[in-house]
Structures are given as C-alpha cells and as structure tokens.
Image (cartoon, helix red, strand yellow):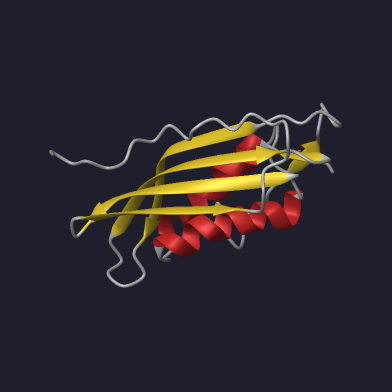
Length: 148
C-alpha cells in the first residue's frame, strides 16, 4: 500500500478513470468514527452543452481497514474538471468508486449542484444503513434559495 501521491509531485489526472486513489491503513481500526470531506468548489462539464457545472460535495464515511489519502482524493475530484457527465453520474460514481476500492463500513455523498437553467439539483447516495453508534451530523449545506 505505498501511496503514489503522498510526498510526491503529482499532476491532475486527465480523467476520473485515469486517477489513482491511494489508501492507507486505518490508524484507529476497530473504532467506529466518521470522516467528512467537504468539497465546496467541485466542477465538471455538462455532457450536452460542454458548459461548466459547479457543486458543493460532502462525503462522509466510516472507515473499515483503510482510509483514503486526501491528496489522491483531491486529484481524483479535480480530474472531473474536464469530464462531461450528468450531476447524478458524477455524484453516485464518486461514491461507488470509493466504496468499491476503500471498502468502508459505510459511505454517503451529497452533491449540492448550483442552478443551471434556474433549477438546482441535489443528488444523494449512500452505501447502506449507517453503523450503530456513529454520530451522523447534518451535511450542513442549506437548500438553494437564490434571491428569495
């Protein structure tokens, strides 16, 4: 499990598929705790118009044997900058990839997408029921209200 990115010069991957996520051993194995990544400046491209789409992502997970290394996660998420996909595909795909590779006890992702054409889209996905005894705070992203 030697990390590819930690302590190394790394460039932004050309695509999410080309991105390599690094995982390291959970330093608190056997303890149920929640890890949160807040990504307030996530970007991707509309697959129809090619215009940029912007979102605030919140990723919560309860680690299993490994945790995701944050630099590799930043590079993975940054690789969506030139990736054309619908909001649902980006949000759910990120969650599914992390679950498939990291194998956490539990993971949820909230994708709070900024309006295009006057309609904000929020996308939520989780891997299953949350483990007992884990504090699950609200994701803290207010519903979009515009000028109203």
